[in-house]
Structure formats: C-alpha cells, structure tokens
Image (cartoon, rainbow, N blue to C red; front, top):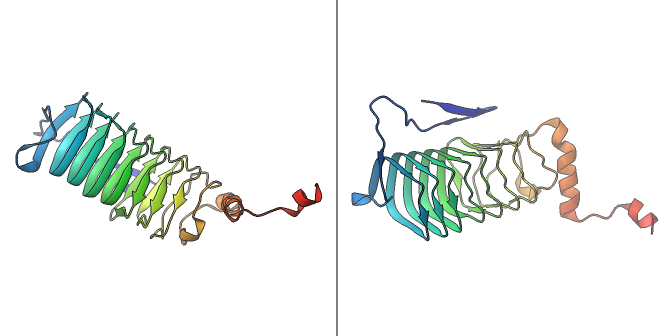
Length: 228
C-alpha cells in the first residue's frame, strides 16, 4: 500500500495493483444496488453525470469529461481519478476515503458537506471552486494545484497540507485551520487571514503574510501620500 508524504502529512493511496485484484471495464458508474466495485471507467464524454446514493470501491476513473456533474450521497473508497474534466461539478453530502485526483480540471467546483480522509489532489486545476463545510478527518494533500480565488468556508483543514500551489486570492472563511501546513507556498495574496490562526508556516513566509494583510486591510502608505 503506497503513500504520498508532504512533510508531516502522509496520505495512504488506493491499493489497485494488489495481487488478485482485477479491474473490469464498465460503461457506467451506476451499478446494481448502488455499488460499483473493482472497476475501470474511462474516456467517456458526457453531457451530464448524475450520481446519488452510490458506492464506488477499488477503481480507476480516467479521461472522464462532463459538461455538468452532480454527485450526492456518494461514497468513494480506494479510487483514482486521472485526467478528468468535471465542469460545473456540484458534490454534496458525501465521504471520500483513499482517493487520488491527478491532472484533473475541477474549475468552479462546489463541494459542500463532503468528508475527506486520505485524499490527494495533485496537479489539479481548482480555480474559482468553493469548499463549504468540507471536513478533512484524515490526511489531505494539495500538491502543485491551482487554487486561484478558491473559497474555503466553514471548512476543517486541520489535517491538510499544501505544497507548491497557486493560492492567489484564495480565501479562508470561518472554520478550523489549526495545524494546516502552508509551507512551500506563496501566501502574499491570501484572503481571510483572521481565520488562519495557528497554521504552520516557515519564517521566510512572514513577509508574505504581512503583504497579504496589508492588501486585505486596504492600507494607505504614507510615502504614497507624500508623493502626491
């Protein structure tokens, strides 16, 4: 069973190459009795994807493209998403465990009341997304992701780590961010700094936070007044 580690945070990855595990190709993610297991679903171009009360177990989803995706009351256990484009994604009231999202486009996604446990987002585009009441109950890593103007609202990211991410104008609303690891990122354009109490940063990032705070407070520098 593999892991992905960023400093103190280690995510347990899906175990899809275990001896005796064979992934069958499926043409739909809507299985009998709401369960799809040991599967490979890929290269589908859908107008819409609607899944509710479904359990996805031990599978790979690759090259999936949708114009609209609605996921509700979805359970995901040991699943890899690779090269997927889930436009206008709305994902609610779900739990995701041991999952990887790699090279995926989730721009403008809305995740609400989703629980994450051992989840890795790697090289994903999550710009303009909204994470509302998203809870990381286990390790969560964002690595080399674009999160421009992404909003975290009432989220619990106390077990999360960001590494080499584009966080320009990303905003953190009220929530739990104690021990959130923000080392290895440019923090100079973050918003919602008042919520980021007791996060983990490097000493060298302190000027970046000062720059972000000055922008958020919309301060005026005396030197600029003197030049007028």
